[in-house]
Image (cartoon, rainbow, N blue to C red; front, side, top):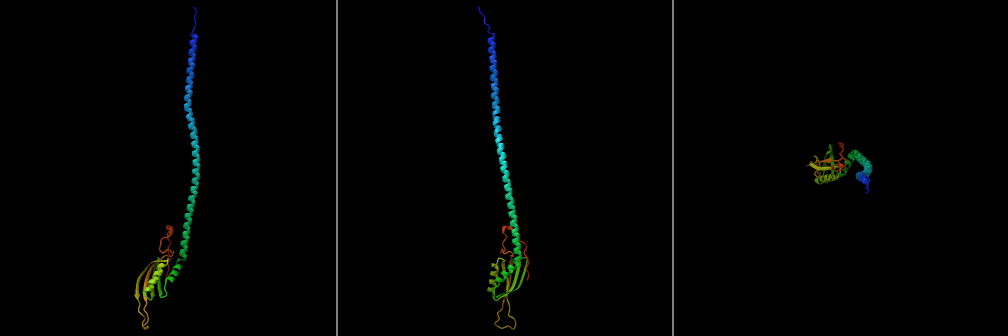
Length: 207
């Protein structure tokens, strides 16, 4: 009878099984590591790309901020320049205003009307004069109102003067009148300054 020792074969099978298990374990571990590492690497690349994009956007924002600052500086300089120009214009108007007022007053005075008194204080003017008739006084007021240097022209009173004693009978009596008006030395007709600029103080005129 022949006996065969099967122990070495069984040991070999067991060893082979253990190797297969170790190989399967190593494979599973490798797959698990790949599952964890690959997404991490992909996310890392995405984060790096996003960081580059963020840095580029921040650089562009910085450039835009510099341009915005330049535009704001230009706007500020423009406002300052416009303010200075308005001040210069007001000073020029203030300097030549009284002469223009008197020039327009002379143009508004008809031939048959004579001013005997002119008083002005704080832009309020009072004209006292003599005219041949009421129509001449009305013409004087219309022409005064048409000027940009006079506004709110109002007739205060009008009276009939008597001929001087000893005068001839045909001597005509005059109409004495008093007219009030506001004076605008800047030629705006009493309107507010453009762009809300404050009006300068009006120089007094006395006669």
